[in-house]
Image 1 (spheres, rainbow, N blue to C red):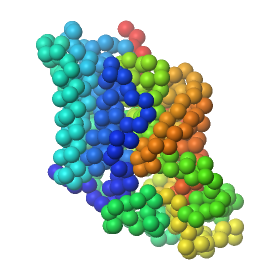
Image 2: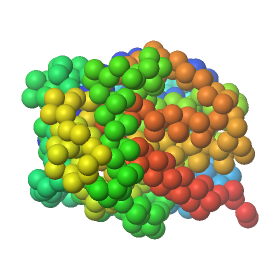
Image 3: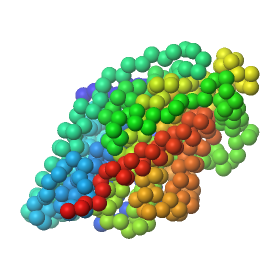
Image 4: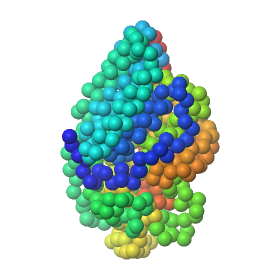
Length: 443
């Protein structure tokens, strides 16, 4: 078994596995797709997977769930498993087995042995409970076989997708280039591991730019033009905005902006999956349509991380905490350095441009708007860890995506251009996901 390196555990370390992860309206007992989404998230986080890894895990599980149900009742085009189940196959058994088998196949690759054991225990407990609700007999057996086939097809398809490649990246210590950077002191949110609390970690998953996409043709399909030049007026505006509102001791950041920064700080797969669950429950979707929704949302988010890595490691742009402390080296007379500046929240160890948090939000919002036929749909959601229990309401998916992007500026961890362009990149991915994949079946 392979243990995930310290640098890859940085984001995980700020995510506390707690029941608050599942905050928001509880899925109905009849909608196993929503239940397995919550379970998959809990298992992935318990297993030491950071948000980038989570996005791949959730997408594989949800695509397998979709294909398993679709084999029983052909409503949509399959993703990979193009076959029909035995007559009378149990949808609940198929869905549970598809999710279980994908998660079980992926857990050994990440986390410490203790994390893997905890995650495996949670998974087996959930799977046993799900199967116990289904009467024994041919329908149950046929459902299990269908779910197993869907999971096997997905795992086989992704076995050589590049996710397990060995990272290779050397930071360039030049003006405008990314380098390891500190967290605020004390770390915010708190990090118990003193080796991680201070920051200064190596770049996370630079090889993710080479991972095979789920819905895009190539990682560079929607490649962005790059961050503003250091000497430009736009860069100076970005610099001074985040310096003013994103600092640890900022007096310009309002209480609402601070709340927004904390609210959206949890992982994108967790937050946007919860929004999808809220909407599925609000619209009374059944398990079949919920499985399709969650598969599309998570596939778009996963490709957002892949496309984001393609762009961010191409331009290799420095984060605000580095730029502000070294502002005397950028050649821009409109920027003033502050060697003691700290961000409000911890800065993940990745180059700045684009904000993949913003990419994920743009992608998920684009899928949700198209799935439900309108962007202008109101909803309310309560946040999960590490700042669980904050409730906010929105009038549209795009409003939520924009606030999600704004949060990274208020947190002091991204420049405005990285967030704005990130949303645009995500929207392109989300549109493609919905228009090209899991389309309504036309016999």
